[in-house]
Image (cartoon, rainbow, N blue to C red; front, side):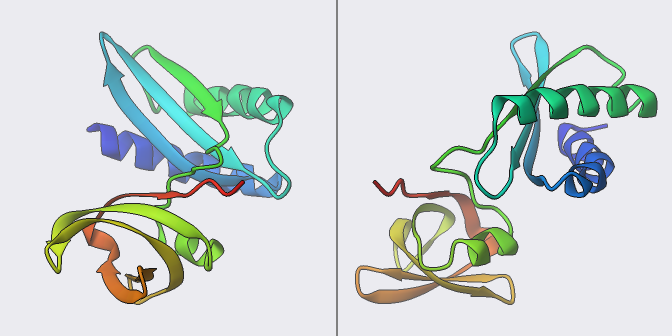
Length: 153
């Protein structure tokens, strides 16, 4: 199993359980770091995540993965909040933060530009509509390498 299929399998396994507890699964990463594998689970809920939420989710996820036999080798599990500058990946993420400012890097240039800072106007048909310095740019979600919320103070 490749790392992306492991992350997807973990996401498929734990999403219903987390949703039933009022938690949103924001992202799952499974990566080799040095000689160890790291499984990172990012969760959120209205009002924010507490340390107790992370601990309870960690135990629950670990038990579910062990029972399912999903990851046969040793790994380190980390459960945390996505943070104030959270990554945005899916259409629902962009829609949730409509009207907020983001920083974005594209895989390939759009109008000779790969880096954008702007306000999310909309996201539909797998395309982000971003207002960047008084111009509107349409960016296919498949061309987004990384998008993060700007921290608003």
